[in-house]
Structures are given as structure tokens and as C-alpha cells.
Amino acid sequence: MCSKYQVIVLTLWVSIVTAWDPIWLQPEQIHLSATGDPTEMMVTWSTFNDTKESTVQYGADIYDMAMKATGSRTKFVDGGSEHHTQYIHRVKLSNLTTGKMYLYRCGSSYGWSSIFKFRALPDDAQAAKNGVRFAVYGDMGNDNAQSLGRLQVEAQDGLYDAILHVGDFAYDFFRANASVGDEFMRQIQSAAAYLPYMTCPGNHEEAYNFTNYKNRFTMPKYEDVQNLWYSWNIGPAHIIAFSTEVNFFLQYGFAPLKHQMEWLYADLAEATKPENLAKHPWIITMGHRPMYCTTDDNDDCTKDEYFGITRVAFEDLFYKYGVDLEIWAHEHSYERFWPLYDFKVYNGSVDAPYTNPKAPAHIVTGSAGCRERTDKFGPNKPYVAFTSTDYGYTRMTIVNSTHINMEQVSDDKGGKVIDKFTIIKNTHGPDAWL
Image (cartoon, rainbow, N blue to C red; front, side, top):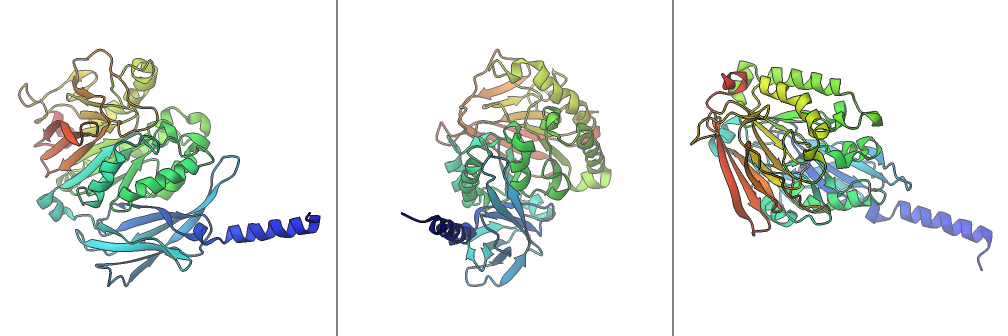
């Protein structure tokens, strides 16, 4: 039998060994994000002990990875009972050659990641020539992440320039003292370590005042509002990511809705200046809770106090500034609407509804796969163009300044494209509705 003294010594020894176990110094949960400058790329990862340094080695091929960038790390303590702690590392790679392929690894002298690759984002001329491609979806958990395998392969094969994840991750980041969040970030690494993984918050991120979401990602200007809203330019598009949750979770000490609305007004006013529209004519928004939906789950879409708030807060603003496409999730389904404002359809014409429409296009794409399964639809509405309860995700290709191609991929049907449409606009911004 151990003496009291021996137990104390043994406990201290175990604590010291655990604290410096090499596995807790190894980089994991690696993901990329855009900064808004195509010559830059942000690399973010986690370790469970402080490695005292954050470094990325990179280069054009495996025999030439002489370039090096260093960054910073922040300590993140989850709000659960175990106070699960990790260190989030952030390193910005600068002076990249646009459109060029790079190999990279991240870590420190205590341990390095595997070697990953990414292609630097295109500049405006390259985007105009080749287009810009996105995978778009919301509501993916690490349990029943049905679309993930297909997305992993397509991301690694270079099918996309970026991923847009429109809220609700892991189901949920905070569960089991944030171990579910860790596991999700390990899973998504197989796609997100290869191309920018751009996000916005959903309702499933609300625990502990959204701290898991705020800390795990690095969106443009993340330190200003902790990844909750931001915008960035890529090719001919100005993409705005914002939080629909400020309407619903003010009791958690969330930044006031007024703050976000002031930012949105200023951002849209700047984006629609003639000189900016000339460079980035498409204005695309991504927010989690949709303005419109017709699923029948005795919640959300059937109760105007939920979605009426989203419409009241954002619809007039987005219409005023001529937003072209509004991307939503939250409902575990896919739903495409006719060009729509205030429940009225404004098709460009009967034969070509998305050619020079007089209102924004809306889609809901929240069926990537999670433990809550998919939602069924209620009665059809005249403003709904297409619905599907298949698991899947959306492909968006910004072809040029006048054309965007949209496709809905069904994972249930082996990757078959079950819906597609093209938005064609010769005029952008507020004048588009004239």
C-alpha cells in the first residue's frame, strides 16, 4: 500500500508527464481561411499544450519548403465542467503567387503536422478567366455527417476554391466538454486543410456565449467581432457572412443587433459604390436562419416569431442594396425559391426567371448531415421553385460578372445533381431592381 507521500509524488509525476506528453504538442484540427487578399492564406490549428511557437513551413514542392511564417497562439478554455483547454495557433502566409499550388506543414520544434497542399486564391484576372468555385452547405455534425466523404474527395481533388459552411457545426462544439467539437474539427480537416473554410455562426454554437465558435475559427478581422460577421472579396464577388443569432440570444451578453446592423449598412454602402461594383459586382450573403422556408417541423418555419425576425431585420436592407443571392441553412433540407421580396415573386420572365430578376435569389441548403436527420416539407407555396429532403450540398460557380451557376448534389443519389439554375444579371447593386 502506498503511503500518503508516495501518492502525492505519483500524482505529481503523472501530471508532469501528461502535461508534456508529445501527443498533446502535436498539431491537429488544421484548417485554412481567406483574409480577403488573394496573396495571403491563414492557417489555424490546435494543440493541447503550449508549444511556445507557431510556425508554418511551405513551398512549391516537397523538396523546396524553405519558406517559413510564424504567428501567434491563444489559450482557449471551454466553459464545461472539465474546463477543457487548448491552444489555437494562427499563422498568416503572405506574398503568395495567386493561383499557385503550395505544400505546407504546421507546428513547432515539438512536432509537425503531415504535409498538406492548397492553391492560392485567384486574382481578379484569373477569376474572370476561370471562374470561382465553392462548396456550400450548413448543418453538419460529426455524427451522421453523410456528405462529408464526398466533400473530402472533391476538396482534395481541387474541385473548389473555398467552402462556405453556413452555421451549425459538430452538433455541438460544447458537448462532452468540447470533445465533440475537437472530433468534428479533426474530421473536417480532411477538407478544410486543403482550401479556405469560411463560416458563419448558427444556433447550435450558442453555448457559453458562442465561445467555441468564436475561438476555433479565423475569419477576416476575427479579432474585431470574433468571427461573428465579416466580408471578403474573391474574384467578381463580395461575400458577406453575418450572424442571425444576435436576434435570438441577446440574453447571453451578445453584441447588440444594432452593432451588426450598423456594420452591415456600412459594408453594403461601400460595396455598392460604383468603383467597387465594377470590380466585385456580385453581392452574396450567408446567414444561418432563413427568411423563407416551408419545412413542417412544428417549429421554426411554421412560427413567424422565429423567421419573421430574420425578415424584419435584414430583408429591406438587402433589397435596398441589391443583394444578388442570399444563402441560408438551419432547415435540414434543400429549398430553392423564385426571386423573392416580401413574399412576392419577381422573376425576370416566365421562361428565364433568374435572368435579370427584380429581387434577390434565395436558397436554403442545410442537409449536409447531422444527428437530427432531415426535415419534411409542408404545403407547397407559390414562391417555392424546388425542394428536396435528400442529404447533400450545393455547388456554386461564379462564372464571371454576369453569370452564377448553382447545382444541388444529392448524396443519397450517389452524387447526382438534382437541381440546377443559373443567375444572369447585367446590372448589379440597387439599380438592378429598376
